[in-house]
Image (cartoon, rainbow, N blue to C red):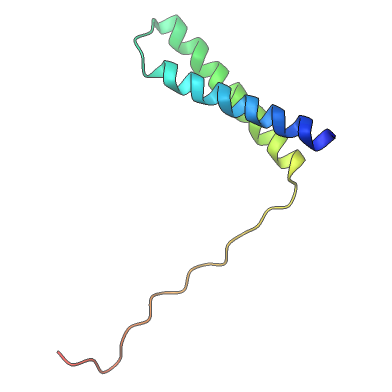
Length: 75
Protein backbone atom coordinates (compact mmCIF):
# COMPACT_ATOMS: atom_id res chain seq x y z
CA UNK A 1 0.00 0.00 0.00
CA UNK A 2 2.84 2.42 0.83
CA UNK A 3 4.42 2.06 -2.62
CA UNK A 4 1.12 3.12 -4.22
CA UNK A 5 1.09 6.30 -2.12
CA UNK A 6 4.72 7.03 -2.99
CA UNK A 7 4.05 6.50 -6.69
CA UNK A 8 1.05 8.84 -6.48
CA UNK A 9 3.25 11.49 -4.82
CA UNK A 10 5.93 11.04 -7.49
CA UNK A 11 3.29 11.44 -10.19
CA UNK A 12 1.96 14.60 -8.50
CA UNK A 13 5.45 16.13 -8.32
CA UNK A 14 6.09 15.29 -11.99
CA UNK A 15 2.76 16.84 -12.98
CA UNK A 16 3.56 19.99 -11.01
CA UNK A 17 7.00 20.23 -12.61
CA UNK A 18 5.45 19.89 -16.06
CA UNK A 19 2.87 22.58 -15.22
CA UNK A 20 5.51 25.00 -13.91
CA UNK A 21 7.73 24.47 -16.96
CA UNK A 22 4.74 25.21 -19.20
CA UNK A 23 3.98 28.37 -17.23
CA UNK A 24 7.56 29.56 -17.62
CA UNK A 25 7.03 29.57 -21.39
CA UNK A 26 4.28 32.19 -21.03
CA UNK A 27 4.48 35.92 -20.41
CA UNK A 28 4.90 36.53 -16.70
CA UNK A 29 5.81 39.42 -14.47
CA UNK A 30 9.18 39.25 -12.74
CA UNK A 31 7.48 38.41 -9.45
CA UNK A 32 5.42 35.61 -11.00
CA UNK A 33 8.48 34.19 -12.75
CA UNK A 34 10.48 34.21 -9.51
CA UNK A 35 7.66 32.46 -7.67
CA UNK A 36 7.28 29.77 -10.34
CA UNK A 37 11.04 29.21 -10.57
CA UNK A 38 11.18 28.77 -6.79
CA UNK A 39 8.26 26.34 -6.84
CA UNK A 40 9.84 24.43 -9.72
CA UNK A 41 13.05 24.11 -7.73
CA UNK A 42 11.16 22.94 -4.63
CA UNK A 43 9.17 20.38 -6.62
CA UNK A 44 12.32 19.08 -8.31
CA UNK A 45 14.08 18.65 -4.97
CA UNK A 46 11.03 16.95 -3.46
CA UNK A 47 10.77 14.60 -6.45
CA UNK A 48 14.47 13.71 -6.21
CA UNK A 49 14.24 13.03 -2.48
CA UNK A 50 11.09 10.94 -2.79
CA UNK A 51 12.44 8.99 -5.76
CA UNK A 52 15.70 8.14 -4.01
CA UNK A 53 13.77 7.11 -0.90
CA UNK A 54 11.27 5.01 -2.85
CA UNK A 55 13.83 3.47 -5.21
CA UNK A 56 17.09 3.39 -3.21
CA UNK A 57 19.00 1.19 -5.65
CA UNK A 58 20.89 3.05 -8.33
CA UNK A 59 22.08 1.28 -11.43
CA UNK A 60 25.19 2.68 -13.05
CA UNK A 61 25.81 1.91 -16.66
CA UNK A 62 29.29 0.63 -17.45
CA UNK A 63 31.38 3.01 -19.53
CA UNK A 64 30.99 2.56 -23.25
CA UNK A 65 33.90 0.99 -25.02
CA UNK A 66 35.15 2.76 -28.12
CA UNK A 67 33.69 1.60 -31.41
CA UNK A 68 35.81 -1.11 -32.99
CA UNK A 69 37.91 -0.02 -35.92
CA UNK A 70 38.50 -2.26 -38.86
CA UNK A 71 42.13 -3.15 -39.17
CA UNK A 72 43.60 -3.55 -42.61
CA UNK A 73 40.64 -2.10 -44.46
CA UNK A 74 41.33 -1.21 -48.09
CA UNK A 75 41.53 2.50 -48.90
